[in-house]
Image (cartoon, rainbow, N blue to C red; front, side, top):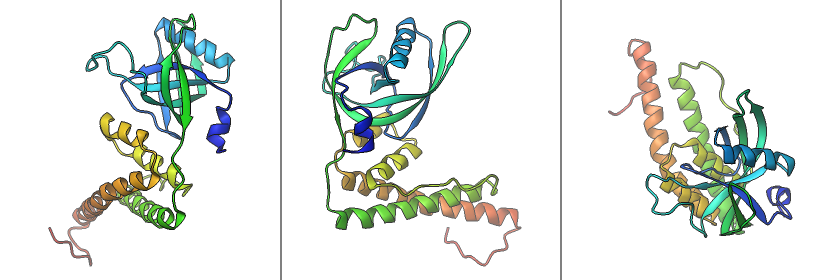
Length: 232
């Protein structure tokens, strides 16, 4: 059993926080809690392990009043919490593991509570997975270096840990400002190979474009003198 699944072992019911966004495993998300029902939820979960579930739901585009049963969400673990004088709170949550929302249960609370089932990616052939993961990791590093170059080398290159391929795929997904539909599809996927393959296509295009822009910007600051030729 993975460390993430060990964290939620024994949990069958989870408070559900519908939001117009997709949270991923290992993604940090700051939240401002102001509605009375979610203030209550926060008080309750802080007594019982700091876990709640975030599920994509946008009331402006949805035909229902809450996320549908069968939806996929992500367990959020409260890492920091600041209670404000008026009762509102600022929290920092970390994505832990994904879940299927099987159905809602009546728990007598003002917020939604769901019967959930946790899941991770299926096991795949490391002979296929590891080389692709290494390639995607290298592309992501190139992208980070180009972004740093464009910033004028202010700051330092973020430390990127090459963890297991599934975790890496979510790290890179979180780094891109994907639309909710695409991010949710990646959340649903149970194949790390498929997710990394799609991310490689995105990175292949983005890295070249970003490196060229970084080089052009560097040229413009050095009066155009460079030993590197760029085809425009």
